[in-house]
Amino acid sequence: MTTIVNPLDQSQFIDITGAFKQVQYPYGAFSKTGLFSPEYVTTRSIIAEVDTKGLGKMTGFTSLRERDAMRTSKEYRKAVPLAIPHMKIAESITYEDLANKVANWQSLTQGARDITVQDATLDRLERMSLALTQNMEYIALTAAQGIMRDPRDGSEVANMFDVLGVTRLTETLDLTDTTIDLFSWAQQLKARLQRASKVSPVIPVIDIVVDPADMQKITAHPSLAALRSNLLFGTGAAGVGLASTLLYSTLSLTQHGISEVFDLGNGVRFITYPVSFTRYDGTVVEASVAGKAFTVLRGVSDLYRSVYAPAPYFSYLGQVAQETYAWRTPIKHDQQFEVLLETSPLFYMTQPELSVDITVVS
Image (cartoon, rainbow, N blue to C red; front, side, top):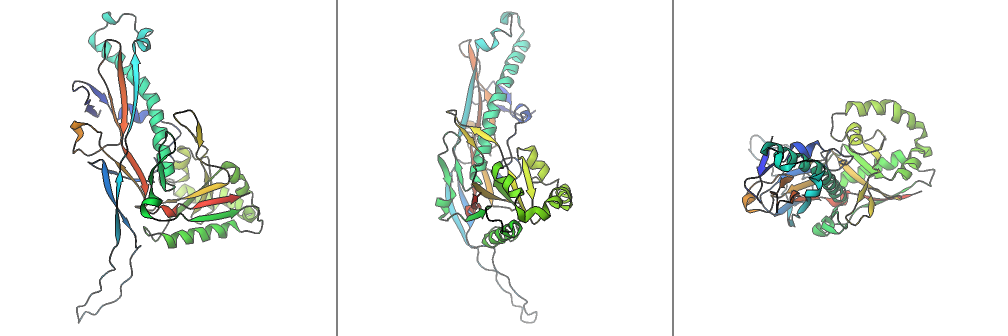
């Protein structure tokens, strides 16, 4: 198993991969389905380069006799500095936690003591992993809407609209209008995003994240009545099966918390994500809000990025980062020791305006 040296005590080790990755929770539709492309750096800040002029221009045929050539259009990239925040979670394991599990500490061999401490560490790591998993998914969810927010209070950490000086695209979906064709509306939305995209001329799939209450009204809309059976049970379902190996397939999404996927069959899907997050003060935040929706572009490279910085300790200066660090301290005062999880993540969009803010009228 992979181990690292505890920087707080060079004689202590703790497994960083086995225990943490075994903990699975219903979060991850944004952080664990390949949406964000990860980068592991050696510093606490980065200079992000963002393409500002689009996909370039076509050239043409040239003369063989004259040996001429056409130069491609110049690439314009904007460099913006971004600081990488840090997150540290600590839990104490005390005498009271072991009092009812160990009859006589003195009678235990050193190996038995190590096993007892390890079992207590893994039990506590499970609870800590739930907190960290929530944190990472909340960060990814908010960053996919252009603004990475702090899980503790929702404050802005990286507002890419302000950083890049762009305005978020908006759209309205009026479900009270029975004459609207939702299929055509979705096609027009996709065409609009493909024209606006500077990162890819093709967008394989656009997910529209809607509230479950709005999803019911979308699936019951008169304009989809003729298509409904085919989309849910016919060729639409077959298409989903063919794409089941993709990280953003229906199968993968439902395994990570997505409840409903309504595929229009034209590269646009309505999805629901009925997941809640509990802040440090106990307040609950829902992943979606009735009357609001937003777009997520799947299969597009370099639109969503994540960056990880190394742990802030001397022994990691100049070292390439990893996503999560875990360790424990030695026993202190013969009464307690601590278990720690740390990570330094930054999630952001290179073209945040492509996260369309959709108002759903119902």
